[in-house]
Image 1 (cartoon, rainbow, N blue to C red):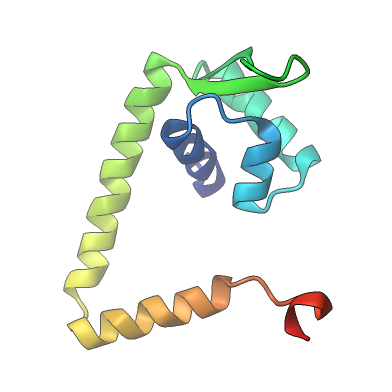
Image 2: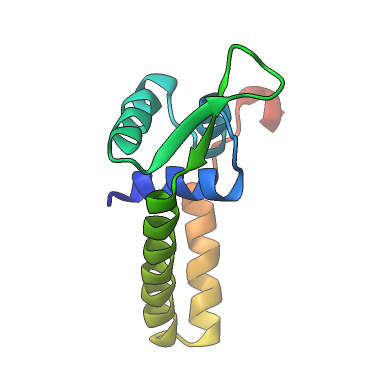
Length: 115
């Protein structure tokens, strides 16, 4: 499983019925890029599309039973990897790493936000 697939499954797992538009906003993915990912995950039987309860134009995404199993397995693997990395660092080093990663992944301010 690719990291981006895991990210999409994670958003769907934590937000059953989420729309593609909401996933794009949450993960900062362009809609055309997400379309292929969703089709692939659906073809693999990991997610299901269901009518959105309030927006007839939208479809909500849900994990299928195999999708839930794969997500749980992937989450357990990710947690184990994080634990392995964290065990190699002192508490201070871990806090420094987290701070640096947040800085790297923080979206740059737009002119309207910065001034």
